[in-house]
Length: 246
Image (cartoon, rainbow, N blue to C red; front, side, top):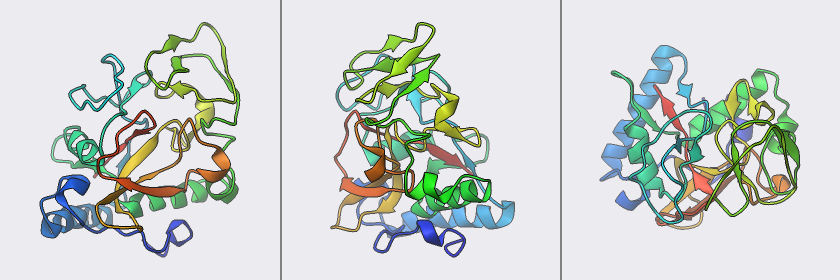
């Protein structure tokens, strides 16, 4: 798998346990058991399912840390932001179906998704050089004809009235707002909100990694393939999450 996704890997970023505050796993054994279940499922089933949308909620938008909202994977929801990585993992687990496991993506899974997108016809440039043609960033403009938009970092949202020209500025969108921002029917892997993963940061201990850039960043520096490490306590309007199922 690492060979298949090698061009999207980055030295120093690894799927290892560091602390309970990181992702909620009590110790390295618990984390590794979770990872081994994922790897076994991929080997046996040939892959995994990824959420079509970023996790959202139809509860009222929030402006501070709050993980009591009901998470959904549906079009037109408010992005589930103001959530730590640990909270995002706990919420992802609550989205399990039947005997399947729902979880944040490990770093290798995000890289595998990018490699699969390229194999499916998405250009390497769209993934590694310039994601502005299909992502919601603050230096790109495009039309949306459904959903809602926020110009105040998610404090409030305005319904789209026929067509809204999203300007080249900070605008947060509800999930699945435009087909433009999708590849193979998966929305907002590039931009809108950063997405937490189960990878460990490169810089120091007690860090989590999120991927893909966000609505208040420029696409040239925050591509679909981009990763960055942040504190385990980080929660703000720019960071949300997306689960996988296996």
